[in-house]
Length: 500
Image 1 (spheres, rainbow, N blue to C red):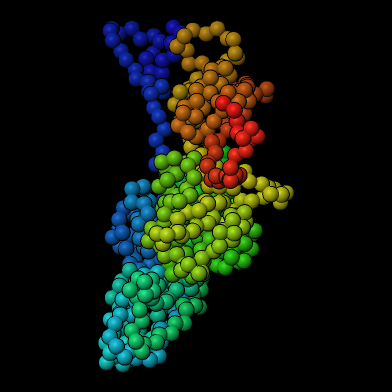
Image 2 (cartoon, helix red, strand yellow):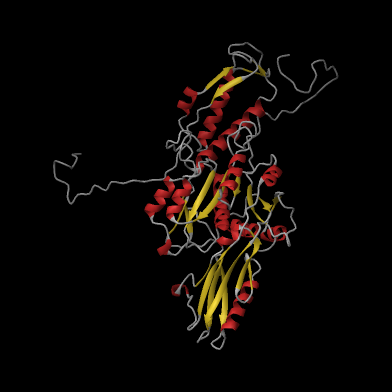
């Protein structure tokens, strides 16, 4: 009986028609690719358990689970502005030790009625003022307007502005006014002067040991992480690393990417880029002048990357808009030469053009050097690992579905048709067929070279093991279109003009 059955016994004698079903040749891989947002909760109002991941489907759920106005709830607001369809989870972590505080001081009273267009953490807070309002009345109106927007990350009294949650993240909440200026209809009422002392003294960064442990073996493909201190990044880089216990390691095979953002000067971002070297980490550089907090930048970047890479992991992310975040005003934006240098230093870049909506310029990772510190661009962009993860998942699905309980024989073995046996050649043929399918789907190129370099062989010391050298040629991206415009005022007859 050459056909290999899994269920029907070879000595079965009962008549007549017996069928076992085998799906090994039918299935195709289905990858969920969920996103994880990591941020602090507000312990007093949150209903979720700290350090425990939780699926979230709407902003109302995020507000209820993590506390309205919390860092994590506002990250979900930025996420949903850019990605409303993909699966997303929240991982709340504990607050820090001290809440950031700042002040808004009304120095002189208005002489005409109007609107103070206040911006707190990138959120527009309009405050109506009257020509008869005193300094105290304007200050009280400002506090009332802030407290009347429960989604804000701060609360206020007549002068003091207090971050709702404790931690260093509150120091990134900026306050300003009239962001859009006169051209946007935002003009300070005559006579009114307002001064701001930025939020500061926020202290404490979460410890992620328990939170990461509670993730267990749950697959999360895209992580938005709003902290860029060395301790936090090292913890998550280790979790997503190539080591034996990492998600990219051969044991776990979960894969995934980390997206973050950092607000700083051009010079400091260049210095920071040299301190990290993780293929799984992409940190977007943000100008000091952007009113939007970095945690919302990180969530927006992660959301748009997740949306695009889930559709096609090999397409570049350039030109994808980051909705809901405010860029720095024109004079405060990075120069194109600065953006180029940041990209070379392991910093992902964004730029804003005529529509005044930031867009991804280059999804650079922090990995810029090899083990010896020499420049190396193998993992320079996010799409490289995203494409490789897709290929490996496709291959794993094909192998585990088609050969789950097979015997292994040498090439040339004469066995009956239908036998559950594989040889190095049959496995190689399967890998080439899978590669051609991946090539058709735009993930790889040059199938002929792949086939020539693919090696499938039995192990010399373990007769039950196959060793594979898998050499995919990942498809590339059109990132630079360079033109030499070699013009002429007139072609010379008989010299430059080709005779047809």
